[in-house]
Length: 386
Ligand code: SF4
Ligand code: SF4
Image (cartoon, rainbow, N blue to C red; front, side, top):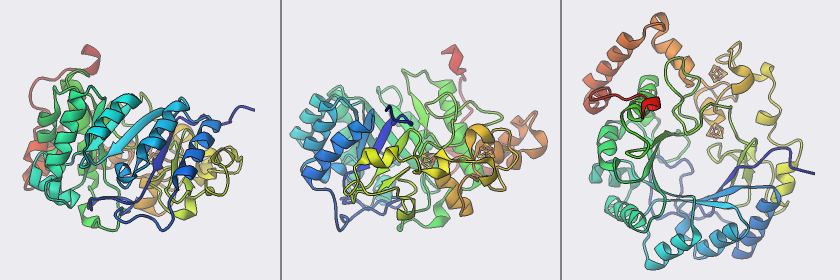
């Protein structure tokens, strides 16, 4: 029987252990979990993922390269015909790492870089010298022909870095993923979370980059949950359209203690659908009662923000992690772009340019936001003209 839900990607936390102490880390990584997969268990789980129809695996942490068996697990993923992505902080280097990565032919090697200013990056990442190491990792991957993408997680501490990051990364043959910080991590003060105007400005920034640069110059990708269903902007993620939260629909998260979640960003065991160390992953994935919050969504479940929205059938109340963080309930995301636009530009949705400019000026007037305030400067090229 073919699986009812086509599993495009499992995001697999190989360990919670990490050599950095990033302020915004949603899982507060640092020490390992009390119980993490053994090598044999991890290799068996690779087979279980394949049996679930999994097409691609993204290995992350913590810092996944801290696991001595990293390449055994990554190789098994590839031997089984699944695509491989690696998400690393880029501070652990060795000849063996780069040589082995090349052999594995990964779909992507994603390296975190949060600022163009080395001191700020180091401060956010909790390690002096982290910027230098991660930059060297990126440069080496590029030299080796690996498909590198840089991930920048935006919050109040680094939003002013976006323009400098763009200038640092363009023309280097890498992709840039821009995402926003959630408030789940234990080291992250909620005061650093983006407010609605800043969150929307990140979407504007991505849009402006995509108009200004061709995909060869700088492919900029908004995270899949960075605003959607905009009344004004093109969709900022890699995908043409927002199809609703994909937790349990086409993606799943696997924690290093075996817990299976729809999405690792909803990192609470109450959202676990089972433990892959006790029940084979494919049984958990194929359980018709699993992931009810997305698979079994009914309009009546939508919260006040989403009730009556014309996108509700498709959108199902947006990003559940954002919804939980902002409202304490699922299917009620108040940070989708159409909700933000109604709030921010309510009376001028037909001609919002003036209001957008005012909003950006307001951000620019607050210390440190000048670079972001100039995002519409320079030549502008629509994506379909590139
Ligand atoms: S209001 Fe809710 S259903 Fe409508 S687009 Fe926003 S998140 Fe989706
Ligand atoms: S909870 Fe948000 S981040 Fe997670 S899969 Fe759903 S939309 Fe994506």
